[in-house]
Image 1 (spheres, rainbow, N blue to C red):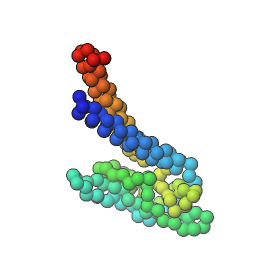
Image 2 (cartoon, rainbow, N blue to C red):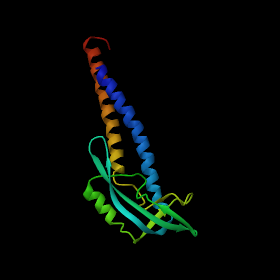
Image 3 (tube, one colour):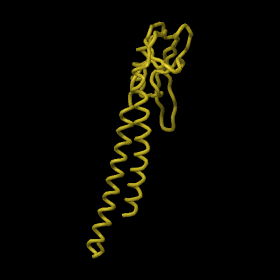
Length: 160
């Protein structure tokens, strides 16, 4: 019973903290939809392999040049976070940004050097939020089961 309660508490608290972080991150990504935009020229577009502990992932990499109020800037972010996946997925994203093409980018009104090729939530944003919420629900369920088991044992033994 105590093991169930301990793991339930860890899942509920850990999932709750992760949920708060994910909600804040997703809200920030959604806010980028309201950022001003400008035209950029793609100067690099490729797929890079990133080795990890078990295997690795492929990441689309781009570089672009843009101007805000007459000041030249460079950017390389597609979304607020670098994400990767399979080679086919990363290649498809990189092909959407061919070298020499003109692309609309959005930039922070407070800092024009903070720029993104895509506004809004990045692929996977909602999955992270869903996972953290699921951990919170599972942990809460484990705590409820542990409480019920304890309460049931007290009632059976006559300690109510």
